[in-house]
Length: 420
Image (cartoon, rainbow, N blue to C red; front, top):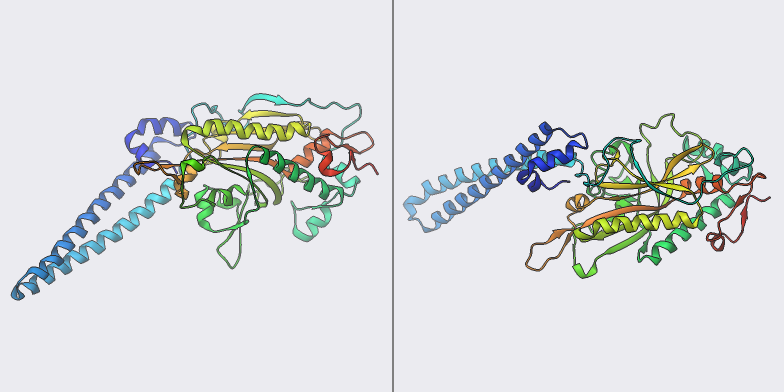
């Protein structure tokens, strides 16, 4: 959620920033009016409470003959207060609902444009070349009986799969490999809950705008998380952090669930776009002045993870028109997939500045009482299914086997997969 005070005090700056994200000035003027209405009603309620308090105190000081009239006046004041409180309640609900749909202000350095207009900052690894027709991940995994898509569809429907044998072992090896790298950078490992309340989804900015992507439980008010970013961010919901604690850094591992609404007919082959997948997620709480540096730091961790896997990828600065609601700036790693002859996103990291912290009410203690909102950042150290795709496709051999990168070999216990 953006700061209403910023919209109030510097409307031109807010309008110019959000215009880059397609938010027009008329929508911001409506927000400004809602904010003004709410502030006016707060003042009116405070005044009505003071008047009621004065009227009640007057009854106690009055002579007996004066009290009936004063009691009647106090009743009028009480009714007026109740009406204004109801008006304020409605105004606050309208205010919260409207502001909840406004995206974060984009970072000044984030490039303009829409999906596909990202700016390539550089690359890691060497793009693989083959002297044979490369297979895609489905061919490689199915030939080794490392995946079962047909039974996944039979049991759960489209966009589900079983990882089997060496496929399952590869996931476990990749997860521990990525967590170990994150721990070397000071991230504390976390296994978070994956069923969360609405407050956690709202606090991280996935509600209300991304409701169509979320799975919910039938009989309980729980959401299945689409990323462990949600429970990691909500870990410090309604908390005041001591500046000496900062930065607070976590690395979470969890299953993730997404409806993939709007993806009908898109990436239906294999495990690139599925309803259930696993991720190793980086998350940081930092002081406001440190968030840009922390963003680069998280990106460096992601690069080390995939550089160690000897996977060729490009680093892309995502344009403002393709940012999620909470992100001010986002970097993606896009790996070259020989099976598609294209670069595809395998991981990303976002600086959400104070957008999530304002919703989560996560603050940093400041001497003198002027506490400030923390800045939060998230990054996918490793999305398991997409990492598997990139690894097996880039390291495949003509006989269908897959070379295991040296840094992963201690975790997997072998130098080659699917060797028969």
